[in-house]
Image 1 (cartoon, each protein chain N blue to C red):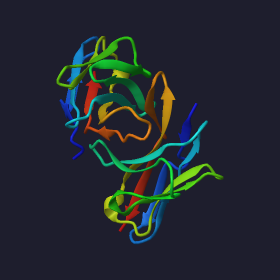
Image 2: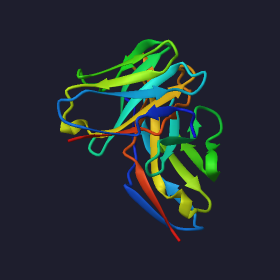
Image 3: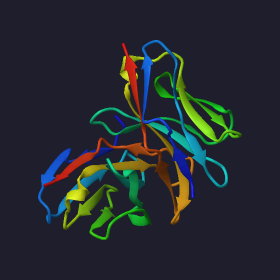
Length: 115
Length: 114
């Protein structure tokens, strides 16, 4: 079965510094990977996805993610963090079971950007 | 704003009761997914409907059921509620059901069972 792991419950970074939120995956076949962000009392917002093609994927709000097949990773990055980036981030993989493609989500990483 | 709407935003009820959560997908989307987010279980897929028909089931309890209506809105029915059912329930929609399709999430319904 497909799975993703987010090894860090929380990441703290100073405003203006680069940030990385880690995600590793385990899949059979081609990986289809997604990042979502959840702000307090809000739903999940789509950031970016990797389906195929370039290993560096650019997404919303200045975020990007690097797909690394040899390390089975899909880390989320941003060159310069903003306080407003503070939120809960979820990595997800598409899993085809029971006749449909559903998301398998990681446990989430709370990002705290300090002013 | 994802374009997916959910009502109500908050729901407080007692054990043993039944509630209905409602979801309207983005305009044009045929597929609706329901997810449960709880502290101990994380985000879990419950059930999916596609163009009015049940497409897949995930970790959905027998006490829970859902349907999708001809206008494509969906309802999730939770009955014989238990304290452990307290959670945030999300609806998501996508155009179809392909592997690369992005799902767009609603703001969720927060359910508290007392």
